Length: 472
View 1 (cartoon, rainbow, N blue to C red):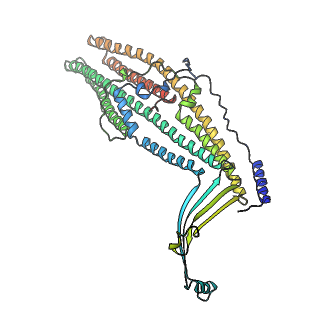
View 2: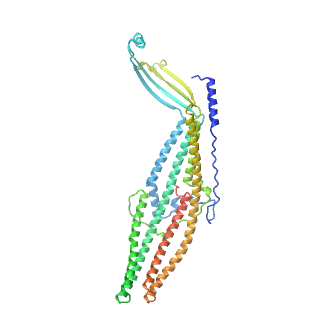
View 3: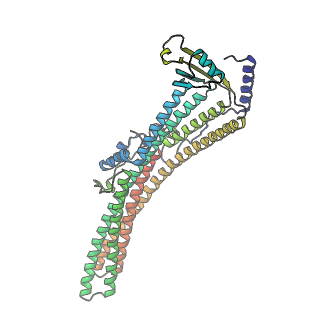
């Protein structure tokens, strides 16, 4: 196809005008994370517990098995893997867009014009028949030249989207490891609370037996006996409550693992759990490469930038080349009459959007806004990540201080219970003093166990917030 030079010149002028009307968009994202987290802990820039694989960070075999099962069978993980598979297919398709498209077409036509028409009279005179058949087999090829980088930008967007799905899988895995570990420590805490409640019940039974004997011999009245019996029932009521929570927690952990409810056999106690004591955290800048959600947000910026470039390129002229070749004859037997039955055609076209100017301009501006939004979301993800690490460090530090205080209080209250029992047996203390001492000791022990569990949870949260848990 011939195209006049003046037409090409006008297209070039049009493209220049479009380019002048669009804004140049910078890819630079300036981030200034702090030099350290908000904590009294010293910063080691060369190490971080976020680099430790989850099977080394959690050394309890039961917990390891629960995490491994969850990673294989959890429904959210399986959906994430399917999303990755879908993104891989889309990326493969985007890579092939710069290649020419080739189509095979087979066509047959049968025409029967009126005998009184010019075509009908011509057929009767030259072919001796009142109809004509036409058979065609050909290959068609079309290709769009990527002059403005539209196809290249689509490929970049598809790649970034694929990488986003991979980071999304990693983010789901870190959350899943975090949830299973915290759920497991919750289960260990409930077992310990149940054990303490049973110990306290036995202690209440012992006290009640002493008071029952004193009541039988007339040393105390019925009021004292009933109050101690009520205290014993209060201790007994805690046991079925903890048993219920244990069963529900086991069900929750099985659900995370994609399993039906069943018992979990633990092999350790809450006090025996060992986690790394050297909680190296690195520097905040490491989160840009360690945190899957932060990397996912950064890739979202790349995707938005690529789509912005696609929207920009769509406002420019597009150059397309098409070609056809094959055999054509009014009889099938003549197909192989080469070269008489061969045909071919080549065409080139330049298309410049004219009336869609407002629509394309709007799409371009929307793409620019989406890019700017993605930059803001990326910055916020970094702020959130630094904040989560700082929160976890502060929690660990303050929980340790609180544990020391409550541990000392618990030891003193246990000693007070022993003294109250001795004084009560010698008549130097009342039954109310005994009940009060036992109740205070019970509450302090329960508080101490909850603090221990909260400290473990804070360490697990620190591990996740540093990007730990997604190593395969």
